[in-house]
Length: 127
Length: 145
Length: 307
Image (cartoon, rainbow over all chains, first blue to last red; front, top):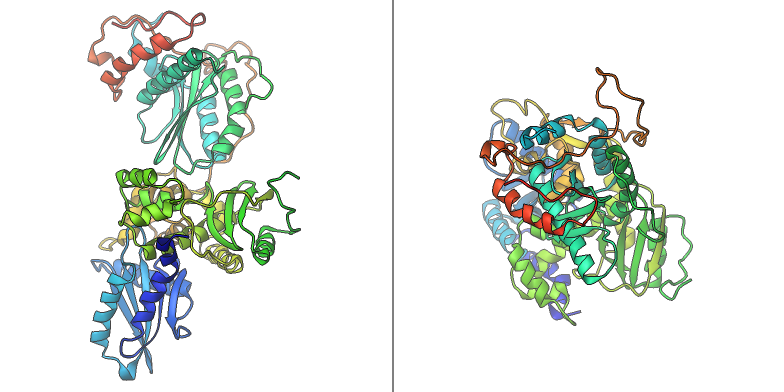
């Protein structure tokens, strides 16, 4: 196995592990945007939920917004519960794309900053 | 004898019997990855086509040329009778098979076409097409796929 | 038993075989026969590649989705020789990152396994001498987890559309009046709609777009719910065509006997109007020479005589 190939193993997980330093971010996962296939995760991912459901949710949101006449592509959406923000950030790619899903502790997160960070992480996660 | 080639060609494709087209359609059902196919005379006149995006007359002409070149090469090099001429590209295949000496079958498929299944199915397809076209096939040789 | 085969562990089905091979730390390939044929490659018990006509390979996805150009791909292939694998050449060329390749490989493995699970295999054989894949996942996917994902996918599609095997063979047709007025079709569905032509199955569409078959099927199910599609049931493959010529046709009966092959005849003039509409006249002229010199002697009329 060449060095370049060895990098395959770690690349995505390293990128995700790096995100755990962000304030309030307790868990993160990278999923396929259509099927929800889990590619990598870091931190406490229990709250993230089954990948297939999240991909379906993303599709549902996109479809319903489309039906309502909304223009443009889905970039992100947030579901806020008593203690957590669940952030789904689209990672655009030719032919499908991925979803970067994070769970953030409400008490220690500035959501606006967190969303900006997520967008930046999404840009870099596959670099 | 009709001396207007246009009328002759278009008349043939317009009345290509259901059975020929059905045979081509059924090949598409049975072999994964087959997208289009056609039957042509050995000198490039279209007989019947199950095509969608490919121009069938051009396909017939090109396939006849390919098969002709293949036969000529085989003859020159001395490697026996031709089995097929396969053009293998990044996004698919074009496979030309003789139907006796007078006609040919060309099968187009994407890069995932099941070549093994194609090889299994084509001998029987060729036999049925030959019968429909009243073309004599060489006697079957043992070991010929 | 040939040198190439190790004694296959007894297994009732493919998942059981893969579990057994995983426990053994098997390296090599498993070739599966049947309507959903294909091969899986394992390295030290983990699945590193799945190849099947039923789903696009990693290379096919990269090219078809235009993630890399054909020109780039040709250069990568040329650079991959000797000890340097296709993966290494691809990563070395710098257009695709290791992370992106890892994600894609994992995806095509799950997609290929799903495509192969659509119908029951008719048999399999292992080959410990099979060469490693050109672009394989590193380290590979655990077969147990692969089976779980595939099982869940089959169940989900059954709920959302119907029996997956039949769904995969369905020739997809766009609805005549897609969607409600004012509604916007998401770009992913737009791409699918452009590929839908009444002939293509979900698998064919996946190849056209360079996407996974399962992903396309999911999107198709969602599109159907949005009334963007009709589904055309696959045309039944009829009994083998009867080749017995019928008795002499009457004047009113349609042609029942063998189809007479069209023949080339001397043209009155080679005017453009004499050409079938749409045919490429310069191409035909160019090719005429080829089949006249290449035609075998004997059976045929003298070569084309069109001026």
